[in-house]
Length: 402
Image (tube, rainbow, N blue to C red; front, side):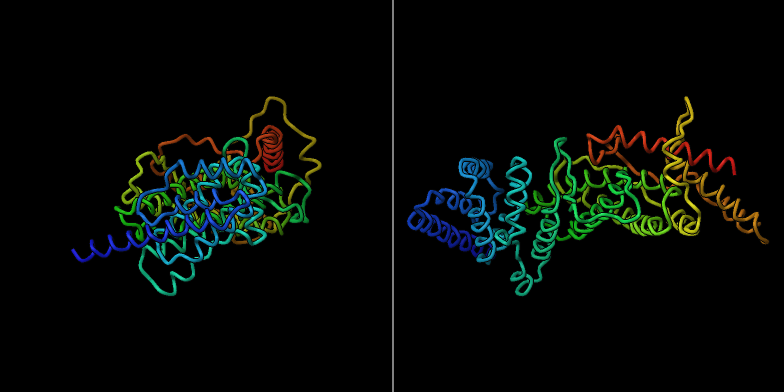
């Protein structure tokens, strides 16, 4: 009974604070931005109910009529988050940021991200960790860390997430666009998935509707990122033997981390199915990457790649590239066989090859959606597919001739 009285008292005091903040905003702001601050306060009130859609739409409407007010909006949100000592208000403020990122147009999204880069939008929750170690507060901090990384992603024209890539970050080994895309975006996918893995559902109470909403939005975005990541891994595996040794070593590092990450992601999704009450979440099939195949690829780092010039000028008429993972296994076996014929004691190597499964992924789990992976760049999807087909065909012909 004491807990209920304490909660009612907290909400009553919070309501008084909210009305005082609204009054100050209406009195001291005469530059036309007071409505924005009032909408932020009302959206992030001290009650435990989810954010009302009308407040978010009001904020987007007010900002659309005055684009220069985005900096003011970012500062008001940061001030609200920095001054509050109430966990619900802090979590609501973070959820508001997340929904604004998902609900605004591309121009608004870019400007809000620019406000974050310039320091006007800050997501600081350190005060809660210093004063409170409850599981719900730990989730608040980890959710803030996820949003920090999420600021580096945009929603493309297809409605899918993709990382913002700096033009200054260029690999020095190849000028081929497909390789640049895969090797630069896969690590970004892994970083964001790491932030998702940090958000443990064990810290969320089934009755905490606000935390449930925050985790549901995080999971929805992780599904998109994971599917795009799987397509990138498939492309990386199929072009592996065409890479130079330094790039191949980088690819092995990505695959080694993916092997561990895939198991962790599977466990997270299974846990969320029992805790997160959103029944509309369509969990993807998590494919567990076998560490044995990653180790086999690492043993082939010294293999001499085929020059890209010859690959892009030859294509067998009417041929069809083999499946991604079958090509990996066959190429691994054929290269190991070639290496074994150049020395003594090769029988043990051939024996170990027979233990490899015919697929890079050791198992496929329950799924509710198709396995059509998300393409990173829609306008380049056709060109990239042709490039991959040529790599498959040339690699297969080269290995067979050897």
